[in-house]
Length: 104
Image: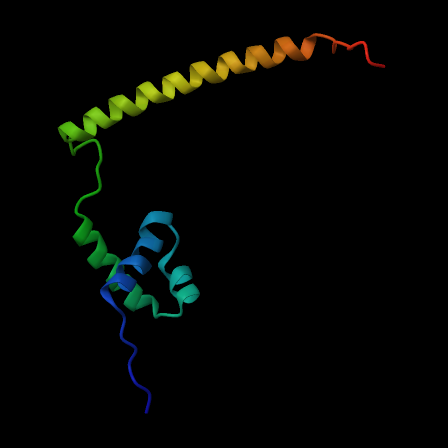
């Protein structure tokens, strides 16, 4: 007689996260990790309930999330500006013929 496998709560959450975070089908993930699709489906449902509603247009951002969003948008703008400058600098130096030093 075979014993039922027991899975830790951490394993169940990680398995459910494979489905929720990657948008892969439950059946594919279940096959990869060798558990039943119905069992994994229950874990996914439990994890969805634990995580609460997904943020969307109807769920307003918290104050700290708004601040982080502002900070990240500012950082993206800075990086895009730096990238534009570096692209122009690379094009400038690529258009100049290489200098020869006197040691040939």
